[in-house]
Amino acid sequence: MSGERDASAKMGKERGTSPAGMRGERGAASVMVVLFLPVLLLCPYATCGVGATLLGRARAQAAADLAALAAAQDVDLERLAQGERWLDPESAVRDAAAWARANLDAARRLFAAGVAPVVTVEVYNPLPGQPMRHRRSGRELTDPTVAVTVRLRAAPAAGPLTAHDIEATADASVLERHEEQEEEED
Image (cartoon, rainbow, N blue to C red; front, side):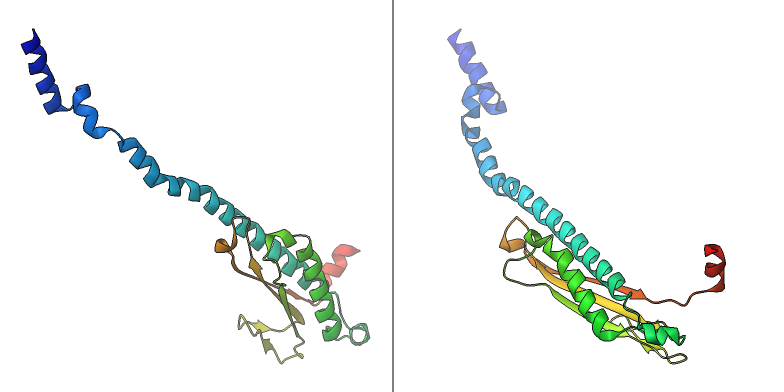
């Protein structure tokens, strides 16, 4: 009977099914764990970085949008009384920068410490029949327009390795009032 066991053990060894045949496989799981552990640890790190980037981008865009809308309210009332749509450049720049910074302060933890956001405001006041070109997009502007750009350094919770620059832009224009709008309000 011992001869049968030896024969079956030899056959099992050849096929790799006997316990004696698995001795060469010991530690293979440990090697796999060691190889894939860095990947498994980096997945949450990358996920946090992507999520924080998307949130930071949304916050920067919201700040640019609100700043442009706030600055578009700075119509020169004296010129408007004469029938001319004109933005007061000083007020528009001041208000846009203040609104953008106020909105970004609420999300300060999303951005790199010690790196202040840069808010750029451009005011375009084209004269009637003399359109201007938007400096960044190149589009033709026929209405008074405020262009706001917010640049900041995002530093997600995942650490400084995932920090990168975010830029958001927004425009708001002062449009001419049409007779249809006046009739709807009455």
